[in-house]
Length: 267
Image (tube, rainbow, N blue to C red):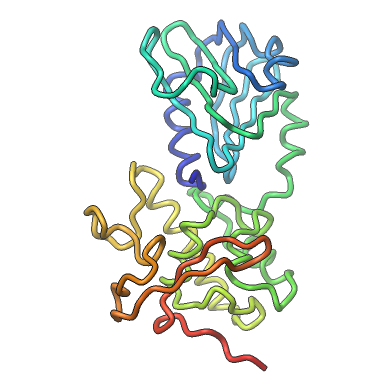
């Protein structure tokens, strides 16, 4: 499932083959490509970047391509003539420079518009948790403005607080901070809140250059994550069985250790 680290990696791959190149051919089945693809065909890419879970491709005429991969989407890069690893029918956007082909498969969200309109569409995003320029103070300000009863799990997924965290990192961050997913954000003092958000930024930034997510520091199969997708397995810290449930609004699968992350007392 693409989170901020995945989008930053995809942006780096696309930047290497697209920036400075003329996109001679634009294709794909998404309605934005059908209606507006001609606006970027024949134009030169000036930059490729990530903004949370959004990937942005800028062109020399002031237009921009934005994609959000959702759950099923992925960006691939191929050499000219190389066989694609997914069905061409799933291609939502195709950018062909003649030497390389960048293909966005199965993305539910595509926008092709003047850059000002694209920037407006993502203006609500909080600081990018995977960016080296992550603004901890701004993220903390936004989190502190939420209703005090908001669960910390929902806060981490709130893209208006900090952009880029998804379901995997949510569970891993909360385990590292020893916080139960239902802990109200209002129960955290300023230091604990900044620690939570800072942990998010460090974990996502550390995974920008990795092909497989790693939070434990042990890069071996079956050992890379603390709690995610490990229901009933022993906690790597205390040995208690990992719990899971659908929590939050909307409900998302969440994993935690009941011993290391005790449920907050009810009042």
